[in-house]
Image (cartoon, rainbow, N blue to C red; front, side):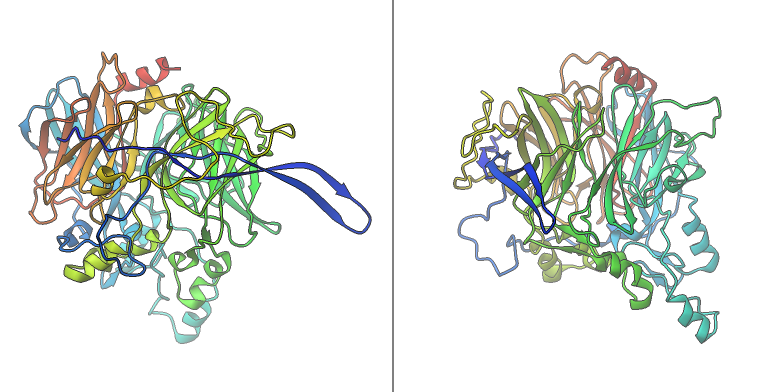
Length: 593
């Protein structure tokens, strides 16, 4: 445990605010008059190279001797019946519920191998915690692609980085014609657990989700977003208001180009029909892509009390390459690319009216996958996100890269840009009377200005490879001012430390052990919590160099001391996201309204 000051020092960057004043139309031309005023950007931390290092062009770090972690992406068998775990230390008896995790668990089908980490077949995990004891079970998601792959003993459905080859049983002419078929969407929901109307689903970024039983992990129903609204997919990171109303985002592709859609799903079911899923879902706003045929990729979005914040980043998707993927033998991965010449655009959408804010906020090129929190205060929208100055990392997570060792592994890591938490403060009252070249930030607790100054070092956070997989006390502090967040430090291709950040005290605490790789930390508040960090942190820790020794780690969220661990006698691959469910947490979430 370290109480070292991470030296979180503000960093300022000019952000242009585009404001349309008036449109002048004539019979010959349509001229739009615009004016630019300087907004502001406040960032908690930035990446800096350690002094004295000798960097190769295209490298962001100069790390050597990374341990091999190839068993983190090895296929495992499911464990459908609950098995006991070995408890070390103490599991607080007040923790009662299911810790659910999602991620890839099968990386080969017959003699075919998946190419990308995101492609592995979804394996669902449950850690049932009660009376200081823990049991474990897992099941492969009963998706159509999983069933079809197993039936044919080969990969028959294309994934993000893997293109399914034509059926070898067909003749040459049939195989040739199959390359001209439109690629279908996979239902391999291996990213996260989400809830809609009180039901549990597993999700990825296509138009398919699956309703699952959180007690048995059985697959109950396949749900297609397209049956309810006109979208071609939705993120695996929806946001939920205190009343249960859920918001998400999804793209649609029309003759007029690509659109980003804000989706709203009602909090309760519209009838007594237990099979009801997304009935009542609506698109509250559609935002045209800046480039009609090359929309931006996004993994999630931010939400405050009154606004959805969509970040249109320079990670682009070439739709033509996706449509012709079967013909060219290229996967979706090959259609995703980083364009550092583009700026990052922040779009604000009013949740109640569905109106898109006419003010757009511009920042330099950056990439973001996960947002931490956002809230409104004193006429500003304050937003904390995890971001990097480069967007190429998504294509680096090839399975062959994650199984490398020695200098080859070091090379993969050193060419990946580090991710750090950053804060953006967006003025909400920008209009035609807003003065030029004047600092719009009047917040007494923020020294951010519209003037760009030198970058400040964040040596402590840099030492841990930045931070990703951020989590907060969501039930009570989402869309509100908050003090603490938790995440994984990334001194490897996956998380190798757990970090607690204190935004007021400018301190951080760290849990780390060599050879152990913790997953996304999930905060669980105690039933009698009076402070924001009263509770525990749950994280599944992977041990790639030790057989059958994965464990569920429980930390005191306040002190970051280890309370206990539940050792699982089976191997578990490194997963993506999870959630904790218990009846008292549902009550806490409702009362926080």
